Image 1 (tube, rainbow, N blue to C red):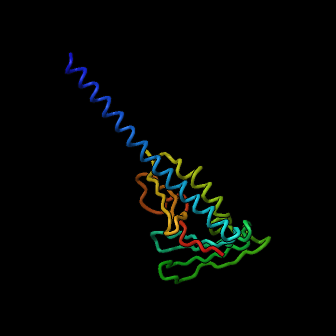
Image 2 (spheres, helix red, strand yellow):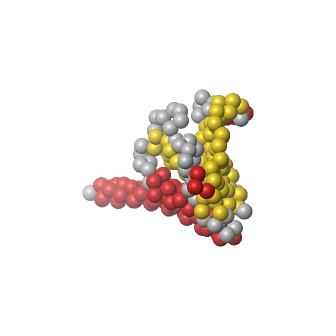
Image 3 (cartoon, rainbow, N blue to C red):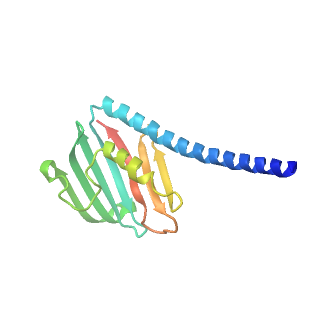
Length: 173
């Protein structure tokens, strides 16, 4: 009877410890996001809420898109877009445009004309909450601790199915 009790206690401790390790990983992930968001708010304040960021999409087929969003005093003031048949070498330009003022959002192509605050919210509320059992989730920051990647890829997907945010550069003005 003592051996059975000992085995049950050991099993329960093992399960409890495994549960703590899982929670620890989630907390570390949450901490990375929280630290990045704090770094962002500090950088944003230092720049008077004026900055630009660059995001891209590239397909396994070679096609790709580049969008640059300019934000001044917390308001999107410009959106630039270019797409290429051969994105790696920026060859075979397919489309190119610039939107300013009331034109912003008038084209259907390109990344959404939103602030980094909105991207952080989207990352937290919709990407990082994706079902980890059905998706592989990615979160990374740049050298300044600012958001670089927040996306998920459904398990088993091979090409062009990532959902989320990929930022190439953030420049404070």
